[in-house]
Length: 284
Image 1 (spheres, one colour):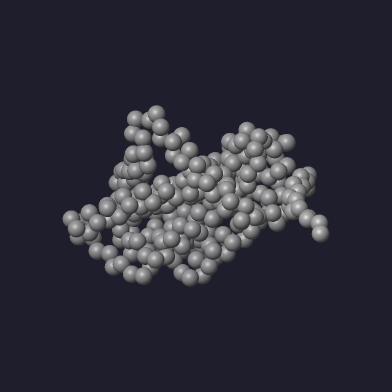
Image 2 (tube, helix red, strand yellow; image 1 turned 90 degrees about the horizontal axis):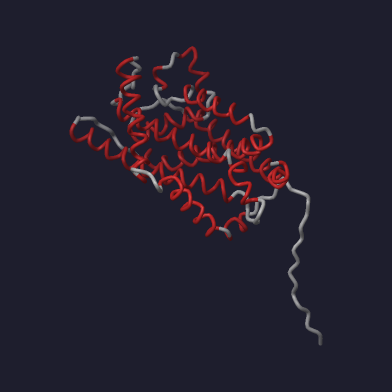
């Protein structure tokens, strides 16, 4: 009787696959994911005057600027909501999307040294960026809730909370997936063509103005409202304010459009990232 030893073979191939997503492998590297998230926090806030307080100080300062410029000087209406609540809610959601997309789109440019020296699932890095930004958003959301309580207790602002509050995780998941998907696609493009990074920054500034961050959808003329609603983020921003603050214009079809955009973009983003990821190491 002979004993047959089980041998594990490592196969190194030059070919990359479109359908190379391995969730078990990503789960096996969960400890690396935790370390990368921790590293992001330390890098961003160590050796600073305010430290982690920047998480809340930055959106507060932006909110004060928006209230003064857009509401007081220009006279942009905030609908039925107090300007402070309206602008702060839009700012923290936009920051989550913008920062998630911005950090994810630089995946290869910022981590080429790490990618070229050791193997691990490349998706770990963009996942760590999204989780880091999600933690920041949750801290800012807590501050928004405290501000909301202040307006309810001392300013007489009334909000009728309902089951829609349960939809907030769905909203943030959808926004996070859109930012991740677009970030993965542009991480490949900007790694190949570095001048596209400047174009991406310009497009993000334009995107903010066609997203209801500094104005409610109700203030947009019906003649051009369809253009703003082409932006898949617009229904999500309106739905977030409707769920938490009780004011927003959104329909089920618009939400389905946002979810469909997220699903299609995520599908193609994974394909492109898996196919091109291993090739970009030599390009960069």
